[in-house]
Image 1 (spheres, one colour):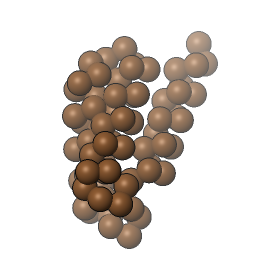
Image 2: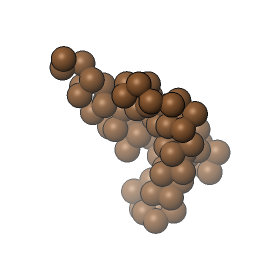
Image 3: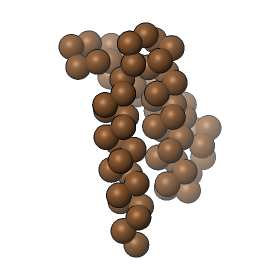
Image 4: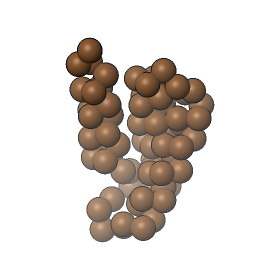
Length: 67
């Protein structure tokens, strides 16, 4: 099935493109991308949201010039 790889790629692109301007936005965008990825992979939405939020927050703190 080709749908899962396409959905995963789109979710990753959205996550990278939408870092957010404030900490709250970064958490929300990351949580959304993580939950979307978890849904595509049939994983836990809560865990995916938590990991996505943390990853986006850390990424933007480590790479402020890219967010």
